[in-house]
Length: 353
Image 1: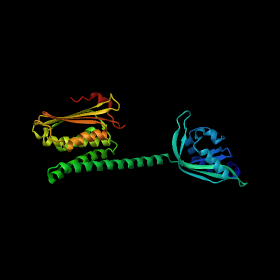
Image 2: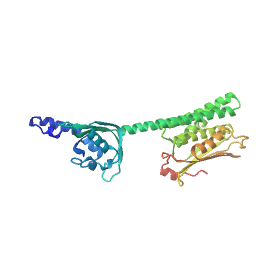
Image 3: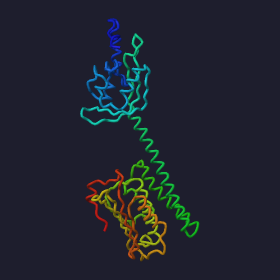
Image 4: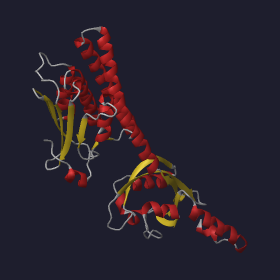
């Protein structure tokens, strides 16, 4: 190609234009000469992929030593020996764009096209392609989201199945069962609403608390005293806590503090970051309600709180039927990387009494 670019004075402007087009082409391009694949021409896009380094006049094995063992050198040898092109799609490659820097994984679509000389033999290879790393990463992320969605749907269906079967088993009459199922479905839906607004990447604990307690609040008469630091929860933790708070609120409204005019609930939490992983410690304490007596049998709400928090989250939950008011304590590890609390809020958080 270099011979043609200098083959006649009359064509110099056109050849200059061709060089400019080659250099500025959006796809990466290179011309390799001889059996050793010596760089004769490279464009700007090619340099952006491999990093700024001296290429012209060097064999590819010397210019890009980090590609050894990745199969590219062997493919070039094959194309040169057979005269047959090679087309690669989404091929992974590890390149070292910075001197002494780490190898970066990229994905490329490319063609190794043999250059046939006047004698009919292969004299070099034309390389052309594009960096499709962003496209591959986007596809991987989409698949991750689909897998996560499938997992969440299964978890939600399992929760719904448990709610329905346990409620039907324990409700005294069909109308009461229907009402209880509807209430629990609404609670689950409210938690889903919070997570949907956050694109299911997590949820703020206070937002989950506000949604879970909303059905039990009275305008102009605040019966919930809520205190705790800002804290983000994983979707699984958020859903389990939302359902637990709904069950506690329902029980308090029927039999506990919320069934009395002066009754109230203290809901507090903190983040214990002195252990690994950090633990969320939450406490629900009812007061100024009717005297509490231990139930004859443990209902669905109690089992949901104690079992789901222990099994799903690897934590512990305990409900105490203290005569002065029900107390529920939750201690669950926050193992998801997205579950964090701002440092200043951690320091300001008060310990549950």
